[in-house]
Amino acid sequence: MKLKLDITPDLVAAMAAEVKAGEKAVTAAMREAGTGLKSSWRTQVTGAGLGRRLANSIRNQTFPRTGESLDAAALVWSQAPTIVGAHDTGPLIRSKDGFYLAIPTEAAGRGLRGRRITPGEWERRRGLRLRFVYRRRGPSLLVADRARINKRGQAVASRSKTGRNQVTAPIFLLVPQVKLPKRLDLDRDADRALDSVPGLIAANWVEPKIV
Image (cartoon, rainbow, N blue to C red; front, top):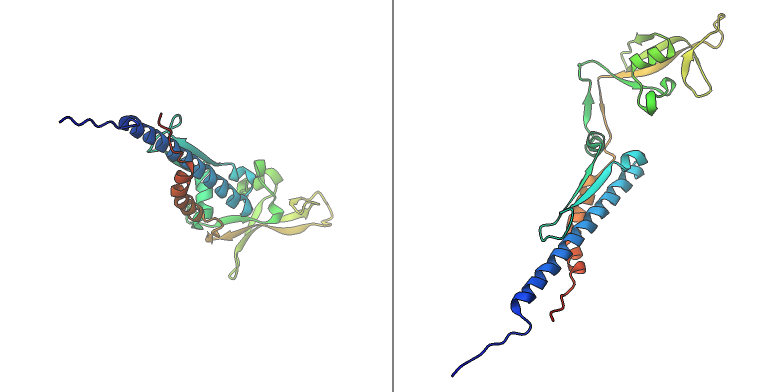
């Protein structure tokens, strides 16, 4: 007696088709998860008032860069990791040299390209010397004498020879350390993206048709 087993469709072809479907599903799922996480992080950054420029530093990339794979992965990162990381962790910041941290007041204005101005830069730009004022309670100060406050609320050199409208303006607050408030929760969105992956794989898995 002879027995003949005929499998239709072909088992090898069916398995290959399932692997191909899996590769597509996993890759598509990781692409969606990565893109969604990038969008969530950018929304967090802008929602915290940190600006569109910093939000746009959040990027993502799916691997492999071309083709599909069951081992597909998504990478989401920031091109400004120090700044984003600081707002995510809320660290305690101290001066590198063990002295004071100079926190500019509104009268200090901004530095070049909108950056936070330093005492040295302020003196060079305003043509005024800063004077140290020690206070037992509250932060000590760097003040500018014989200054005037312009329409922007910034201290500039006074040209008055009579002393009219001249003020002694606090330009910097001096503190030994500052606790940066935690304004972001990146782990929360990352965990949500990770939890969504199985559902995304299932949603993107298209049953292959075996001819």
